[in-house]
Image (cartoon, rainbow, N blue to C red; front, side, top):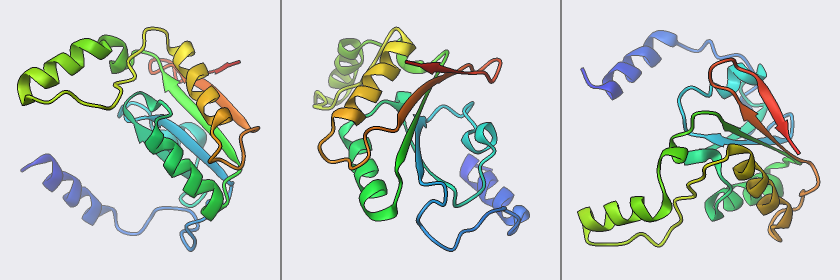
Length: 163
């Protein structure tokens, strides 16, 4: 059985038991949460979220890229979010690579060099600050004043605010 087959099997067994209001695409708490794709970050459990309460946006590192700004702009302008919560984490895979080394690898294997930034970093708090600044400075976002960033400790579950 493939991983996808296993997930489909689990979904069939789960049934319709997911709590929360799913009647509208507009999140009831009017918040967008941006975080890393790391599977150790269980966003709904960390914040006690129910379905329909928040938009959850994920990518490698949880960094604010042009595509995250695109999603946030839609979230704010068309779906009513007013706050942005950034959650990066300890022991992140992006801390294990460098921009040039990863691009070199991809170019060596594919013959093409990516035009996008890897957004690798060494210090997670600096990455959070950089992402907060990108949100606060984006002319495409309506709500740039209520932006907060945190580091999630994947071993203890503790959230530490970055100022």
